[in-house]
Amino acid sequence: MKKKILSVLLALLIILPACGGPADEPPTTESASIPDLSAQTDKTMGRFHTDAILAETVLTDEGGVKITATGLTYTEYSVDLDLTIENNSGKDLSFVSGSLGYNCNSINGYMIDGGYLNCDVANGKKANASIRFNYDALMLYGIDEIADMEIGVSMTDDDYNTTYTGPCQLKTSVAETHDYGTDHYQNTITSGAAMNTYGYEMVHFSQDTLYDKNGVKLLSSGVMTNRERETALLLELENTTGSVVYLSASDITINGLLVNSSTWSSNAINPGKRCIVDVDLSDVLASPYWNVYGITQVGAVSLSLEQCNADGMEIAAETPVEIVVPDVNVSFDETGTEVYNSNGMKIMFKDIVKDPSDYSSDLHVLLLAENNSGETLTIHDVYNSLSVNGFMTDYSYYGQELEDGQSAVIEIKLWESSLADNQISSASDIREIEFGLEIVEGYTAIDEPTLTLILGESA
Image (cartoon, rainbow, N blue to C red; front, top):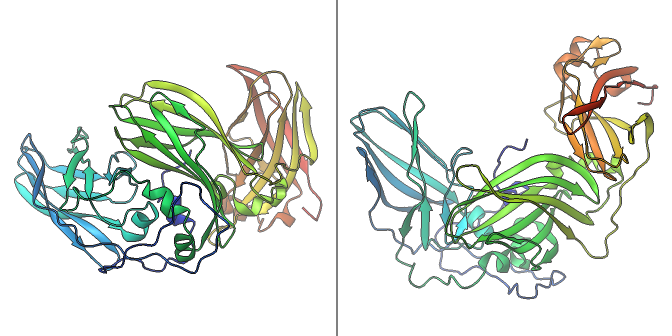
C-alpha cells in the first residue's frame, strides 16, 4: 500500500537549514551508548567534509555496456557521483538507479534512499550522468564524508527486458582512515546538535535487541516528532548474512489500535550493511485523525517484520516487534455510534473529516472495527457499492485484517470530484451514506452487510 518516499528523516522536518558545502568544521555528535534525550544544548551540526576524492573506477563492463565512475563533485547542497555510460549492447537502453523498483545503493555501510539516476542511452552512444546525494539526508545518517559507495544500476531495453549490475563498490581516498567501528547514525540522531539543526525531538530511543532473526538484527529504535508534532518510528537494522535481504513492514498499530494491516514498506539490505526503516506514523494515520481515535501521544508502536530473498521467497516469517515509550499513556478511544454488530465483529462510526491536505477537498469517513469473534477476520468493501445521499459516489478503501481481540481503523475516502458532481462540498451536506462490506474468515465470507449511516446537521 505504501509507496516508497524520501526518507522520513527528512520528510518530517519543517525547515532544513543547509548544513552542506565545503568546510573543515567537523559535525558535532554525542555518544549514543547511553543516550540522554533530556540533555539540552545550543550546538548545531557542522558541515559535510569535502576532502574525499574518487579515482576513476569502472563499475561494470559487460555485454557491450560500460559504466565508469569518473569522480565526485561537491555542490552547495549535495555530493554528486559523476558517471559516463557507454552503450554498445546493440539495443537502446534505459539506465536506472535508486528507484522504487531497484535500489541497492549504500554509503559508508548504510543503505541510502536518496540518489536517483534515470538516463536513456541509444545504442552506440555515450552519456554523462550523475547521482546526487543531499548533504542533509546523509548527515542525519551520521555520514559526514564519503568513504565508500555501493551503487547498483538496472538496464532495460525497449522490450522491457531488464538486467542488473548488482551493487558495485567504490572506495574513496578516505576509506582507509574512516571509522567503521562507530555507530555514527546513533551518535547523530540522538544528539542535541542534530535536533537543533533539523528541528525535531527524539522522544524515545532504545538499543534493546527487539528483533534478531536469520542474521538480521535490530540495533536501535526511536520515536521522533517535528515542530508540527508529526511522529515517525525509526528502526536501525543490520544484515550480517552473505546475501541481500528484503525486509518488509506490515501490521502497524499505534497504542494498540491497528492502523494498517497490509505491507507498508519494503527495504533491501545488502550483505554486511545497515538500514534505517522509517515509518511515518503521521502518514499511516493522518495526524488530524488522531484525536478522532483518542490518540494524543504515541505510547506504543508495533509492526510485523518479514524477510524475503532476492527471488521473493520468504526466509523469515512475519515477526511482531513492539516499541514501548515509557511513562506515556497507551490507549485509544473505543467509543462511537454502533452501525454493525454480528458474528463477533462490531463496527462503530466515528466521524467524517476533511482531507488534511491543502490541495484536496476529499472527505474521509472514519470508523472503528472491533473483532471478538475468536478468529482472524478481514473486512473488504463490496466494489462500487457506496452512495451518498442516494447518489453513487467514487471512493477509495483498503481492507483490514483483524486478529481476535483487535480493534482497527476503517477509513473510506470520498473523492472530491464525485462529491462535487452531487453538489456536496462539505460533511454538513451529507445526510446518508450507504455501502456494502464483506467480512471474511480465511477464504470464506461469513457476512455481507450493507451499512447505512444516518447523519445529522452536525456531521
